Image (cartoon, rainbow, N blue to C red):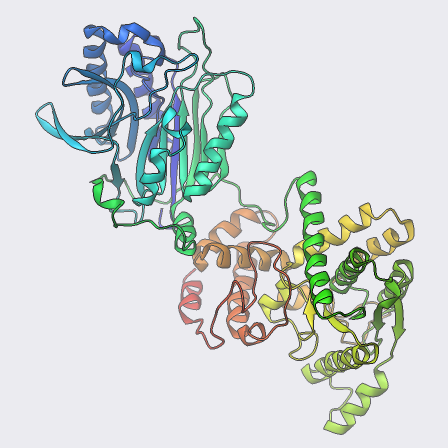
Length: 639
């Protein structure tokens, strides 16, 4: 729990209608099982102590008395268990009947939360039996002890900073302004819903969308527990459709028409980070929060075992259909950004350095798409290949063939003589393959591209991707510089999928063949001489696997996770792929390079944002170039 994860459960017991003794035993058994499995917040369905379908039996004094006795029994079962339990029952107060959620922890009744919106349409007749609850909280006596009664209640845990829980019941969620909206604005970041939602065709999809959308709008965890088997099937069937959702993403979903329980680990720190970032989410102790009663509850603090999945490639959708749709969308965003820039400055020519590698390939494909949208001739795209000391025949031929099949103008400018002349000017030994040897080539290429752009009256289009920007893997004023960077917010792990998508869908056999070969070529800047004709300089051998760095980048920038937490989830995401020591080694490299290379990101060219993480100094990342990495490195050193 030190990383902000808390294990929660939505539970549906198999009940007997109006048999409170049986139902309390079924609920108690599930509490025992869920607690043994690490559950800290347990949510049961609406009116589950009696059953939702009691109808006019709710007027029977015997049923109400037995329901209260069953609640007291469940309270005793909860004694010694440091977990928060929500269970539904009918509750009589001052001659009126309410549909309530009772909140229990360690043998104590912490609160009673009445349902506010009672449906009386179609199959529902709740107003026949129940009165709508009020938001305002008043104190009532239960067994001689004061207990809060009302909707505006928050349950906070001193041991887990930031954990704040609130509840609503079934129909409360389906109205235009659900109580959970007020709860969240008052500070709740976990909403529970005790429900009895009937099953009719198509309803499960709507229910799922409703829960997911509310969770996303409120930047909260949402635990939805619904009535299931055992309810009366006189006219209706209840499916026990349970959901655990975090900020719009489903962590767990039960099969319908079943009983049992589902678990999930909500990430409270992630939710808090989202709310800190979202300045339009105005929550806190202001006017909204002042009307709420806050009740503390205790949890046993322990490490939460994680069963939730962490995608090792968070920038890349795992499903093929989603991935292809995303690739088409991203290519269009990139092309539309370039299209607007060209239209604005009335420019009909563009220039790119084409190496035969992935990044310059993607840039050229985007340029072609933009020109097609503008109905400009592709021949006015100038692709410049600039062979030098490290160029291999494979990448050279791929660059030439790609330009030919796409119908763009290809210029070949060998830079060996120019670079050697420059080395003589500055006294650099050509046999000394150091950073000057490498960067001299990169800067010569950029100078040529800028001058060629002047010749044709065009723009130089940058090819560098977001992963390279994050690591500072670019030559300052070399490949670091351009007049518009179409790949600037595309991570390396996604570049590959964009090129593959284009190859799969372009419908041109020769172009596809070239693109597939580019995809099979190792990522390299090709600045060192080849060995036996093969690429000698493999980027990922030098800076580490890009899939690791993209994973680190996503969770550091998107959610502000600390190094220890990123390390923990990376071990889960890459289990069986990389060793723990290997992950930690490159995590340390990532932090050092990310902080040390900010000065390069502070002056990058314009370029379009395509995803939720971007590094533009004019957009998503306002970071000082001289920020100290010390406190992050100190945590890394303790791992």
